[in-house]
Image (spheres, rainbow, N blue to C red):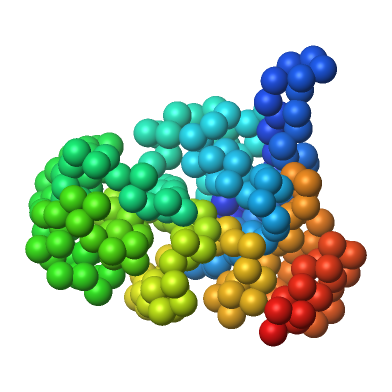
Length: 253
């Protein structure tokens, strides 16, 4: 019997409002993600990419469909019940931190969600900060005292301090300059090699995903219209929308 995938999203839908005001954001989403795999989710703004991450991490409830982790359904659970499995890294990392707390204090709050609480907390925090190439003393500063790239790396370190099975990256490089983007991707690549980290990587940048991800899923208007390896998507696109995105990438080059 084959092992169940780490994550399975089965016929998931999301809608807001009721009656005539009902608005479908996601429709019939089906995804499987195996341990150690990186899946890129590509699409234009407003297509539902960020909402999908919120549903997977239970920050929002699904309107239909089911969610499975290692073959066990977890649809309807609360965020605190799945925080050990999934951690979301947001695009605006500074806004994701409490401005009244130091980085270390925010990381302690994450650790309090775990059953073992804050056992060896400071060591775990400093290990993660160092792993992201940052000096440990920076953890005692406030988010506003760090650069954009440093705050984003701290956000990744905060997500990793709980040792999740998967991190969900929501356009984490889009607000950074090219050098900061490259640095963060390099650290994530190293984490994949060292820890076999599984990732869902949301972006609107096809070229970036093609170099970093094992598979790519193309989203349009709340639906996945195509999914495949970078070679399949970039060299042999099947859907017209994928072809349009690829033409735009080639044009900007």
